[in-house]
Amino acid sequence: MPTDAEETPGQFATWLESTAQALGYTSDSALAKALEVKQSTVSRWKRSATAKPSTEHLLRISKLFRIQLEPLLVLSGHVPADAVGQSEMPPAAVTATERQIADAEVPDEVRELLRRYWDARTREEQSRLTDLIALIIDARAAEKVPAHHVRTAVELVETGVESHVLGTLLQAREAYAGLKRRPAKTRR
Image 1 (spheres, one colour):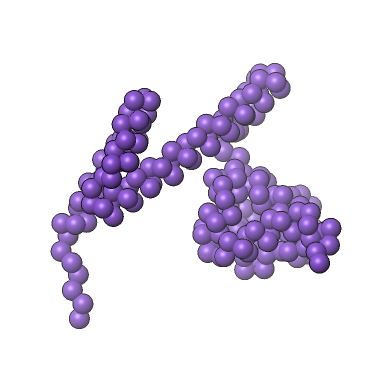
Image 2 (cartoon, helix red, strand yellow):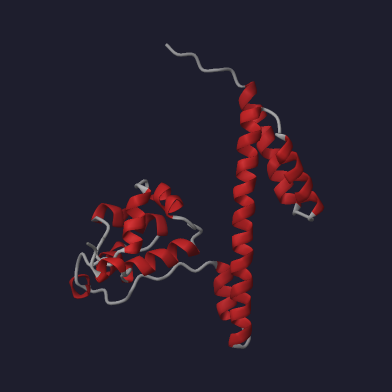
């Protein structure tokens, strides 16, 4: 039976969740794929105060998030802070836009409004990207655009979708067409 400590995420879990979200890893599976580990491994790190990544996994996290390894060793409980001369938590990932909002010379209420606006826009764009990827994959697999994707494309145009989205679709189509024209590699 899990103890209260195992049920309550610890500092590492909290840091991992917020940093992964800030860098666009919105699900455990997305982060797991980027780290080349099982989704259940990431889920365990995030939900437990006692589960900690191995040093090999911390090295992967360090490389993926582009931060020093030492703060992760401390945060995850592998070494005491004084052993590596590190007493601070690793920095949370902050995008340029988040930094711009934080640095804006506006009242705190407005800053919070801007953060909520940016979070909503980011989620919306991530959703659009997911749909765009599905559209490209389905069109490639069928070698034509399925009817439901034609409707989606029409809806995108009608809602004033940015030209870069449609441009990306056309470029993907051209890339796939180029792949079809290449001669197949022969095996020896």
